[in-house]
Image (spheres, rainbow, N blue to C red):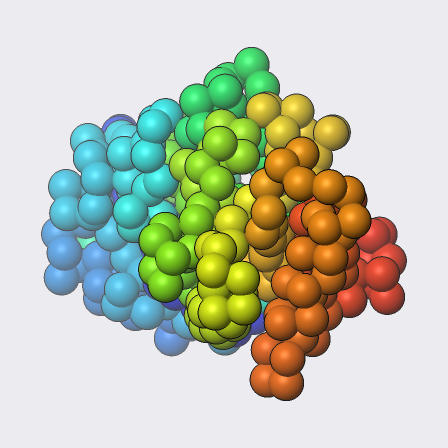
Length: 366
């Protein structure tokens, strides 16, 4: 999930050189200092030898700069598709959230260290039984948000894609083969993709290159979908604004929602309607592809909007009294800490948004 903690994956970037390496007996140029310890270099050599690899190899490093066995992949054996000079970790494209992205981070809602991921790669040439860290060039970097992911619907085309996160480094020459780039996500959830070429500038596989293709996801995990019809609860599907669903909440908020529905039904004989909660993976709500006229809240599964009597079907006083009743029932002991009557609905949440700056954290407690 993140580089700091809660890691959901162990990734190694990749693999095979599309040029034949120089033979073992050839002269090897003097190598610059490597970020890898001698023990790590030996481990890379051992793993590469076991897997029958040769040529340009990249390894994703752990925080202690150690290469793990699961960090090393060869295109012919990795997930996705690969050839001798290209690895696509996960097939990507419009229309579906990637089932197994290479890494996952939360939407950038709090801007905390755990909302980042560090691409920390050591590159070099393997000519069995030796691994030679080598100067490499990173070039041709492209970064795209994959439309129709993160719960955002078909309006989100390549013309109006969701906002992208940012990478601290997108290329250059790295004399010791050590490439580090830190990803900071945007506030919107969804899948993204980076592609770049790594070319060896020296060593036994000088001129060889690897084309790297990585798909990853920005997701807030653990949200659950409110059940339309449970205990009589109604989800207003007409409010989804071109999203797959805007009715996801934390499990605790879901429980409070059903309790509120049961009490409201008992008191009035009517069912509550939910008009908004959160997207499947949380994050920013746009409005029909407009990322500026966006929903300011409902990003973490902490908030639910309720209606009882449909607007315009009763007198103004009776409508206001109905909203007041929903707020009162919603804030019974052990339920929502805050239920605020707004113009045509009640906004219930785990916090009072009036006490939180809109420019500050939007997901209190995470």
